[in-house]
Length: 371
Image 1 (cartoon, rainbow, N blue to C red):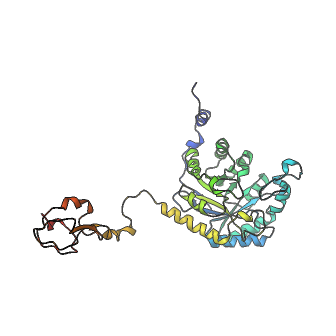
Image 2: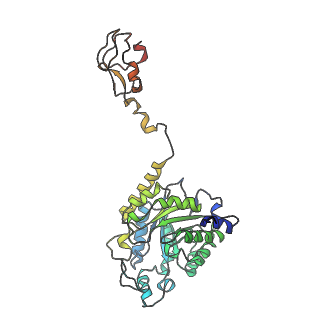
Image 3: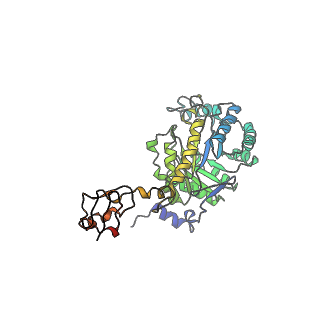
């Protein structure tokens, strides 16, 4: 019996597979188009880097705007909505940045107080920067809907929470799904759930859910595969320390990049140590745009920058005076710069030809000068 592939099975299950639905080449968030034909959309993830101080959150937002980021992203949960107060082994964190804490205590110190959301949204409007969030339960979606959030992000750890994805999709807003830890089947399920429940504008982010994540584990070629395999726009949620991975991702099709941002990497907050500082965020915004511009399109024609330099290519020149009737030889004709003579490909062809006139040293060789 012939082995049935996973994708072939899906085609049997669904008369019109979601990955064959015609997709727009871009989505829009708050009026900004996002897709391969537009400069990468940069999200500054504020996360827990407020460190319990709303003024620090305001400051990060101001710096993100100065740096050129397109959006600020929050995380909307409380310690009560994301986990429970329990000290059993399953709720303990062992190793990594948060070693020794329970989930409850970690999120109690890290969460964004819900009463901050309205002033943060108002601050974003004042600054002229887009703001939205990652909801972690239905009540978070309700809060964000009351603030008219223009988009939603599904965090990597929530990609398996299909009821949450369904609820977000039903808002009709653009959705960004991060895929850290998810396998192909889980990504497929998440995308199908979003599509089946009304999501028409979707970006799927390749991600490695390590904090920080080693660049050598990022497998950036997955970005292009996500776009092709699932017929979606793709991007990158980057947890590496510097910007090299994010800039490289643009050349593989990432149209949206998310990075954590802080005022001070040594600030002591739960996410500070793997976040960008303001000057690094500014470099990210600049360098990813440069990388996108540099990609251009397939082109074998001379660019505008090259046209003025064509004359400095090599060509055939007379390098010693040649009398009429004298033969052209390797001693008196050479391939040198500039490029006003015959092309070097004619070099062997002209050797042995007789000059029809006296030719002075420094003359570009042309066909009217020899037999």
